[in-house]
Length: 468
Image (cartoon, rainbow, N blue to C red):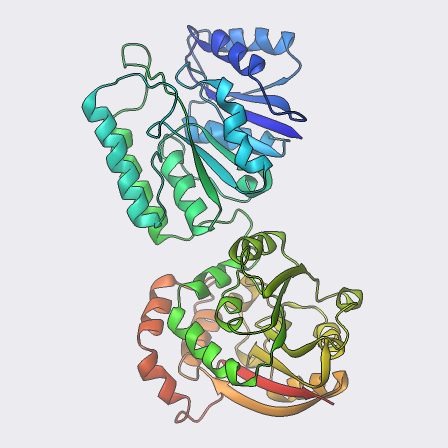
């Protein structure tokens, strides 16, 4: 395995050579190699010449340079884009942190327990230099604030030593250019529900006279970053329609409503395709003998495996509903099949319906939740990766061709249809705003009865069909 050690550097000529030699000499677990991805952030004190000399002597070093000083976060962002390892470890180019602790930092990752590991200076490490009281208290306050807004409990949010699975780190967008990187990545790891572990580390902090760069302005910026990424769900570098799923997780009332409509039709064994983050799976799997949550998106699969790691009746499988062969092995194995907002994102939904028909036992039920109304298909649908919105007759035709008998169709969310038309056809939006969704969710007690009163069809339809 390969460890990418990401090293942002700026004006560190007095310590950089010794620091990097420690990184090169540091012990690593058996079977782990290293590369040093160094990004010089436009140093002006001779650091760049020292780095060039080291890179010429050591083939493990890959060296890059910013032509304009941008900050630590920008340098880390560049390093992430260049990393080739299985894991990424962030290492400052000073002597505050001890590279001899790499094995302890990597242990939870190599064991498969963690997605990210933070080295904590405030757990019982081997040694910690005593530093000014208020500097420590400010760090503790920022960590406390981050914990409040992220709803995770770490002891040292501002630590430099953070280690990640590279595939996950590359999938998280980094926007902060300076020291806001630390609270930003912490907030985004929390929102992505990554498995974060902490291990104690020693700390040999510098004073400002010795070259420490972070200041009180960065502390204020950190508070702003925490608040910003509490409000904004900017957690995927490539959304691929995931933004809609993220917004859906912020509407628990709507999810409970839909789950309540689906639950009476479910049997003891269930296959859900396109399970996403497990938003519905978590509500529907209770008391079922077997619940198979299927996904093709690797990041969704990762989230599902984390969520149901210790749920014995839930099995997470990789399944691409665009491939007929993906359903091999499921023949006649489940009582119920679920596809919630899946068919509209498939170029050939008939393939998925045929596969679900094969997976169901005779008389088994298929439950579909699908967007309705081809006339209001527009920019929001396109941004979500949807190829179409269905009309009821089209769904009925697809179901009959796949071997299903239509049992029931229920109109869902009639009140939301005018707003969707305005957003997608008139204002040509490309995303759903979080605030209106929250308002909608908090006022479901008003919108739900309108489904029985309003004369037009719903924004979505719930379809129940039975295998012939």
